[in-house]
Amino acid sequence: MRILFKISFVLMTFCFITISNASESKLIYFYESGCRWCTYMDEVINDSSIKNILLKNTDIIRVDVHGKGTIEGELTEKELARKYRVNSVPTLIFLNTNREELLRVPGAITKEDFRSLLCDNLMNFYNC
Image 1: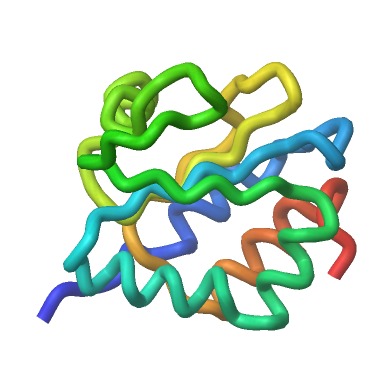
Image 2: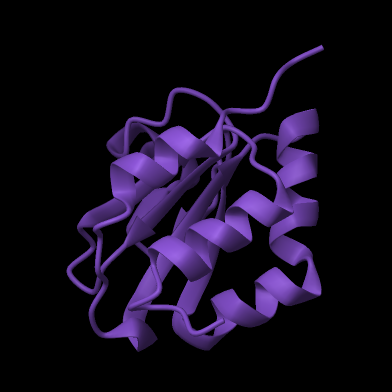
């Protein structure tokens, strides 16, 4: 049985991040077809309470790390995964308006931990 990454590490590492200009920030969600942990993260992200928080301030972009579709007319999904050095799935990357990486969450986390990440540690960005 695989163990979920401990969110406490992520929370301690990223608790001082602030995000500006919320309307244009992005969450890039890297996944792979057939990945059971990606399926788990799909459920977390698509939970109504989480989705309502995210959609207020964030564009969510799903990227298949082996995909051939283009993202915003620039790179293929596979090239974007390579650009952001995604080595495992699922991986969530929060970007600011300048497309600079603000936060990376490697691995699957629970709905409660994800909500805590958004509401407690990114509270300047998300009103929960």
